[in-house]
Length: 618
Image (cartoon, rainbow, N blue to C red):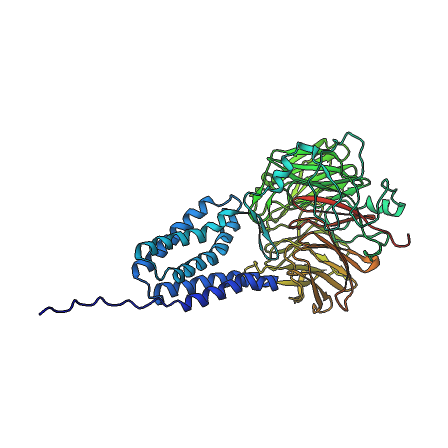
């Protein structure tokens, strides 16, 4: 009598539904929600991480997979992540982007694991395990196909296919200053490939206009009022560094009187804005291994001269190039590079008058995001900030005149104000704000409020100081704008908080003050707060982490969005009203716009463009 063979125990089927639900929620929170609400990108990162953790817990403890597969998948994931980190594009492998690599990989890795578990249930053991390794490698390998232009303030990384030409490669593929002045873009603003053009020594010609807008003839003479205004934009954020552009009023109906594109041209990477005098503009950019201070014609975009230093700064958030804006004063251009090189150049020729290294002069290390200070010219001094510390040079010879107090890290520029009749230089830094005497750099007062140390401080009409922060980096200090009452008494200077508002949270986006209100960016959206109590009056209009300037005579804001759009918004406290919008340049745009008379200048790390506006009454 034969006994029946013992039956092998039957393994329970995989429990798949928790993994499927978890990965679906993870993708909704990580990718779908930020598309609808860009301000929620940070929550998307948290959602991706939590989703990945839930899927890992499901797989290890509740999936019912053989333990060899549970543990084997974790080992393969570790190996795949290690290998991916070493073969991704260099722009992704370092700094903050090294962290962002995992932010993007985790959802793809999670999806690969869950999709494999669902699809491979009926496969033989050997094929099942081989396909598991392949799926995990595929999930990680997605990031090897892309490169990044750094982070966008609004919604994560500026991703492109790895094999596409970078703006730097486009620029360096053409010989030096023979980079073409690009033809005016069609109505869609898609920029065609540039054509060869003459060098700066040749007679300049104006580029054709934007399609569907009035055709300019020869560049028309600028009216005396506009010419006078144009000569008064000496550098970062205008004459007073407050983002205010005075001058002849412009027409705000861009449908009836659209801006006319004068020219557009490729430009090297960098986050510099412009200094303008007459028909010359000055900016800073990176060209390969050299840091450049360049001069161009306002009316044509043709290069006039360039000065170069053998220096290159790069970090993963913003990429390569200088971060500061040149300053014009009495025939000279003063510049500060991202590694700390300070130059005084002849404005007409670019010849070097003197040069210093602010990093070595102050004993400062180059900070994570590079030196970002636009030089401030005060009487016979040139003042520069190096990671939160001020240094002053003799304007004529470049000798170091004084060194300010150590005050933590920071990325803002020195700001001249007068409080209680006393001129003083303010500097926002990571620890708060300091004030020093212009003559010798002695500390007058300081106020502690940990912040990003990026945006410029501002004054109210009655002399209070406004400081802001937008990322909450300051040791849990929160986000928003704080109003500080500063006064000088028998015991010296004092600085006390009046109010703190979270209705306006500027990160690296400067704000302006107008008629008792502050206008700026609350994250990626414009907002207005009342300076009496800090309460928000309105919030509206998505422009990403852009920049703006104020046209006070017209109660108008000129906004340059993070995506390169120019817009006009009413500087009114009752409601948000957009008056006009125009696509201007392609790509991530953090640079400050300039209104020089009737010419708007805008740039980013790829290109720059000039538009002529119609003046009211003409």
